[in-house]
Amino acid sequence: MSGRALLRALGLIAVLTLSACATVPREPAALATYRANNDPFEPLNRKTFALNQGVDRYFIKPIARTYVRLIPQRGRDGISNLIANLHEPVVLANNLLQFKFKRAGTTAGRFLLNSTLGVAGVMDFAGKHGLKRQNGDFGQTLWAWGIHEGPYLVIPVFGPTSPRDGIGSGVDIFMDPFIYLARHNQYRSAISFSRLVVGGIDLRARNLDVLDELQRESVDFYAAMRSLYRQNRVAELNNGVAPPAPKVEDLYSDPDDNPKPAPSPPD
Image 1 (tube, rainbow, N blue to C red):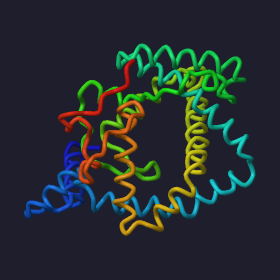
Image 2: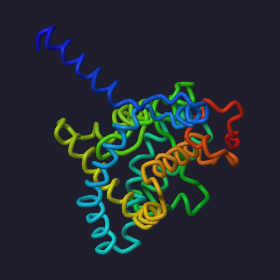
Image 3: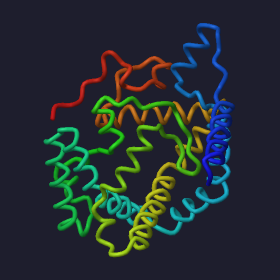
Image 4: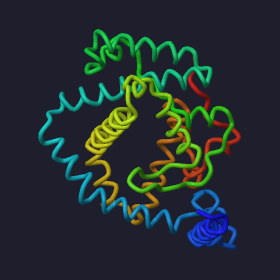
């Protein structure tokens, strides 16, 4: 691609990006809501959300329902445990990067016990003996380092995220030691893709009824999902501790912006 063609392409991307931005309201209350939502690309996000709904309706949801019908609860629990156990080294690395050494010790203990006595992680042996599953991802690590999340984004197929968490997800892939066990790049890609697909189906299957009920009761399903994502992410960033009784508009804000963030449990 020539320099002129590159500039033309970059200009087109800039125009499309700007045209996808929501119009900034001038009325004070509407402006406050707009800023709280942190969703400047809402028109584009809504189109992507509609696309994702179509993919979910015709592909992902039917597969998840078939998964539930064919595999009993115990089997699905085993698959969930196995996927979570394979992810423990990434959680451990992020615990260490956040200087959460007690959590890192718990994660290391869980991985050791579940990989052996838990039959490669199919059984959550460690959880049954008091070692609670920890959370940790590189998006959370960036938050702990003071990096702001950026605007709300909806990615095709993958759903809601933010620039910070999107970058974090990419880094987590390269932090996963299991992909380096394969000798060839195509095998590494196959391993990552297989885990991603199985994990996505399992996650969708565990939320079938919840999302169906939310969609039935929501006047604006897009806004309801945005709010749900925000609440869940705030809880994850605070190591599973939900913030105390926020106002409705605060559900859309990044924890960085809260002058009195919910304290993390003692490490």
